[in-house]
Image (cartoon, rainbow, N blue to C red; front, side):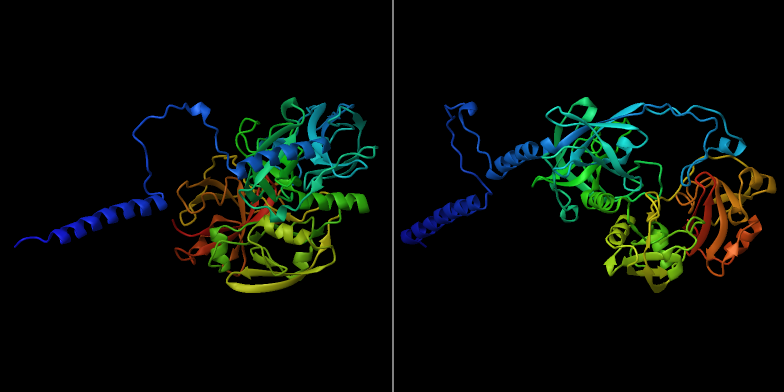
Length: 521
């Protein structure tokens, strides 16, 4: 059969049309690109680069920030004119680890403390109020401030707050350039920020980066010896080095959103991460010192840590969230939380109707209130939901606690024979009368000392050597532990896969906490 010429032409035309149409369609989707076989006679250097407008705008923004904010940044030099000496080593503050030698006497020594220090700060009012870090000026009796125009002024310390590491200074001068304070609560992870300060003796240095994280806690940032410090840090990869402390962290609009405070580094120098105190927290400290001459901080009066998987499971929560309430201390026997009915082992999940998923979140909610106000607290207690109305108290001074945020650990391991408890993966021994007297243990802190931990057992990362198991809190009723047999009797009633809630006292840190351990591997 002969083929039809017209049909062949029609079919061929369709193929060509389809091919051309495919190329056009593909190029529209950027799936293929048109090119030319001949080489270009131009060199690449003669072609002007195409800069996206957004990048050009960002370049202008950075330079504008430097020009606008740097004049308000100051260099701070602190000096100590008197040498501090002591005839006897002072006992550690609560929350600081004690070495085993502390139990066997103290030694005469001279305190080795720096005679001077340098840091940064920034002016927040035209009449000379300055924000900086507490650790930049703490312990020094002479503070000088140098401006970008090289003028130097003596500075008065208006107030220092150890729990936030914020200090307020004042110089006697007017008409000063000052910083615009922003709102860190609206700052998002990934946003550009600029750090300005005096690192490594290089005055008024500007570095840029992004907000890497928010709400970092005390396990991530350690700026002082207080385990009760308020920690709600902004993390950034803008380069921060020694000397940057107290300088501003600025957003792309030129507003200060934080005070540069600490770095995460094994060498003491910048290695990728820095931390800043949120400006909303620093501003509260500033306002209190200026208006009242002291910190007026609302306190819940409870020690807390971030809830772990075991804590959430014991509380009856489906997700790992909230904060675990720790035992109340003798320092605050009538705390607002205790009066309201909150107990150790409770997991707080909401405050004032807002989610409290971690320590920093709860602290932020509480500090938004005034002392004397009532806040509704929602918590879970061993499978039951509880609601408490807590009338907030007021911190007595700068070291009064809002909420503890440290799960204490002491890694001093003193090998001793003891009784092995396979279900917990630990070896314990009863504390003798002589040991109790040597360590100055009260009856409330007497129990079973942990002498060894199975690295593959359920107690790994939950307990530590020299922890003292004081009591079993749950399953109820509560049972005091004095002998290894007391613990074995409790474990005999607990099934594999269930949880045991322990009251634990740490010999090194002198702190009591609640520890939840899942039985079995």
